[in-house]
Length: 147
Image (cartoon, rainbow, N blue to C red):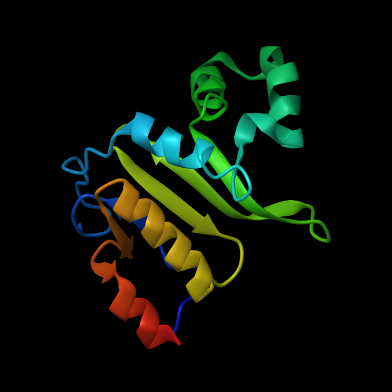
């Protein structure tokens, strides 16, 4: 099984069809925040990044129709992992979706099995599943098949 950069990774309570309803997810936001806060060597909140600080400093320039969304992402709504100094951006972005109450994981490169192992740890902490493209459940045996 080959991982691709454009695979969609999500942490949710149960599998779902892409584009379908994830409203049964019900991941606890505060528990997700707790996980990120307990792993400061791995994750950085968006508001603590250079870009996040610049956004906050210039929030008055953001159109009113986008301001609420921008502020939500700067209040422990999104975080990053693995800064690529050469390219000037983070390779992994993670966000809590308050509507579906799921966690979305985006990669700027092909995910590595070690990445997925870390996100499986997060999913287990959240009493949820790590999913690939909504329906594939990633567990320990799935990770072993990648080796």
